[in-house]
Amino acid sequence: MTTRHDTRSSAREKTANAHTQIRETESAVSEALAALRDAWDYAGQRIAQILHLSPTTVNGWLRNERVPLGHAPYAPDIQALLHLLAIHRSLHAMFSNPKHQVAWLEQKHPDFGMPPVDKIAESIEGLVLVRQYLDYARGRGA
Image (tube, rainbow, N blue to C red; front, side, top):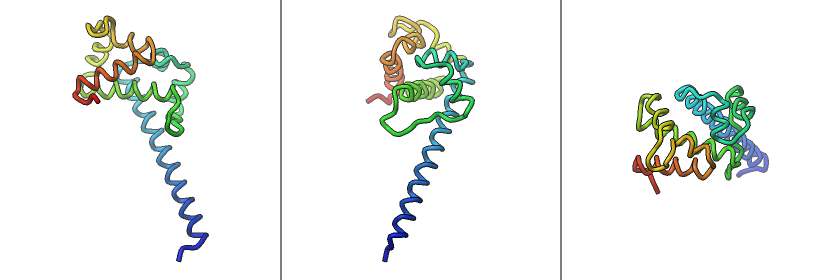
């Protein structure tokens, strides 16, 4: 027979587990952001510029080793970051050498009429477009 105490205890355990999972995910996103920064040799300020965010925000995420995700649906700044991390993941899968990843980003691309990094920095739509382009290029498009 389940008691009220058992039910409350179980609910507390589920809440604690959910908070632990969120913290672990926030740390993983922070690690991915630091890996992007290191691989591409982009300062926090450059990443912030690309994402249309405050350098204080991005540098705070990097310094604190935590990106506060909150709950889905994610805030626009978090959505933008997740798109950029997906771009990094795709480029890493396509080019193991980070210099080649950066070259792909920074050289004029015939399908965009500009370097992809400029398309990304143009708007959230540009960011999503480059992500979708890479997803399709890798055979992962919807």
